[in-house]
Length: 404
Image 1 (cartoon, rainbow, N blue to C red):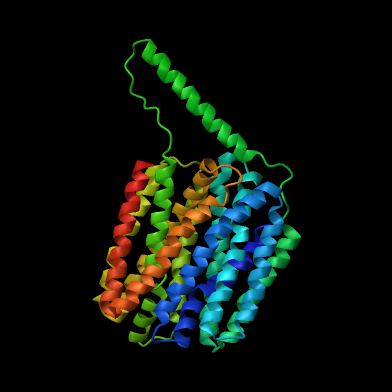
Image 2 (cartoon, rainbow, N blue to C red):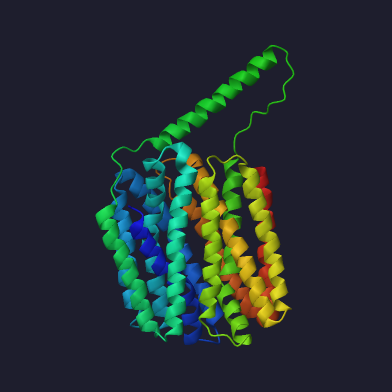
């Protein structure tokens, strides 16, 4: 039940995720893509130190609920203020402040899942949380489709985003409780250390006995894991930040209403929910890093397939884009569950915000680079270079996950 507030919070952000880029384009159509990149990049850069701060403070104070409430309340207030101005500079400032405060719930949420459930259930617990909140995101996208269909203006849409975050705040105030004991992550760290030492003793004893040895004594390469995360996030942001604008162009060329953009993302979100469901049913991460490698490799290949949408007819392009987004949403869900669970094993206490920092670093650079490329090189070549650049970086990330 404690997740219910997060459900409504994600509804608000699901609606905002597609509404905001389209809203910026309506304010300044000539330089809209540049502004979209600036919005996202500044927000994510500011979120990086904030992630460190919130992760450290929540683990130090062990008051996780407070930071969740701070995140939801600040989002509700700032989105309400959003509705009173169309000044892009002021909106960028407000969005940056909101991004910093919004990150206050991320590390506490991860810690709550890790501490409320035993290590053996982390994959399932993260998958349930992500799938549940992804369904909230999907409902938010449906609300976006409905607001466009029924002619809601931007002010009322922002009021709706604000109200959904307010509901999330109230529900979290009533339902979220701090764990009475915080020790599960420490036990996992001790367990991994003891297991490594045990394998080391076994290897040494076999060598002293003169026996042939086939087992390799190897620990995870944490640096490779971190670099892989950053590059994966970089490629994802390069591809997905300008993508709503590209889809909107294709939808317009096909003589369909703008609200159809939300419908495309609804189907993508459905693919992600299916991915979380699959990840949740797996009792253990049997394939380990190999599963992550394949996911990143396929994401890279799919990025190149997006080039087909530049060549095909508008109607065929919509089918291709929707199919790719469903598949990529599915893969992203499985990837996130595995990496979240791994991060709780690899990242020590008081540094629980590091996972969000790594994602934020790649996302910050990618969210500026993607729209910048698209705007600079024009409609066809701009998005062609976006797809190619994202695909190449996904493949480099694949190499790092192989090393891990």
